[in-house]
Amino acid sequence: NEDLPCVSFLFHGIEIELYSNNKVFLEQFKLYLPPSWLQAPTQRKKKVFHFDLSNWDSKYPFDEEHSSLPHFQDGYTIQRDFVAKEYIENDYVICSFQAQLDDGLHNFFRWYLSPQLIPQKKAMIHSAAILSENEDEVLLFFGPSGAGKTTVTELSSPRKVLSDDMNVLHYDCGKILCSPG
Image 1 (tube, rainbow, N blue to C red):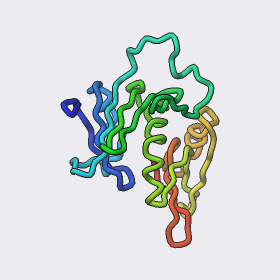
Image 2 (image 1 turned 90 degrees about the vertical axis):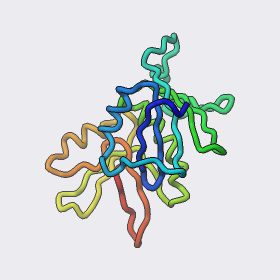
Image 3 (image 1 turned 45 degrees about the vertical axis):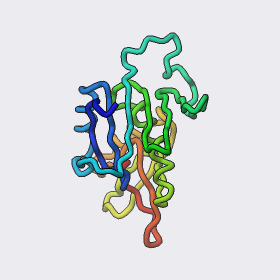
């Protein structure tokens, strides 16, 4: 339903409108994004319809799954902290995760945006990225959730942190470059 409140943003050339039934979450999400990513919507945007699971009562909560690998059933992608169904022909996706700035949000966008970055010769990587002391190199740290990526970034001062969760790699002019995701 396009009557829901939304936030429009640009992620590495992909225009997205995120609609949600949780206005507080959308405001937090808007503040979470770099200001340079926020933009007015255009006709080329991809629409994401989010429905908050914060009050969902189930004896099988997503977070109890041990694997972070998604599985698929009847056209739905189900991961430990989100459920989604993509309608490629209409450029929209319906998803559900808890309305928080946490793994559910990040895992959903990693799943959703990764295939869209491939035609641009970019790859989204679950990693932490820190600039070297003289800022001419990027140090990447890989691992599953809970492996210590965020801890490494918290201990990296005075080095600058690109991101503690998602980074986008691409090849340009003979070099692999890294941008925060």
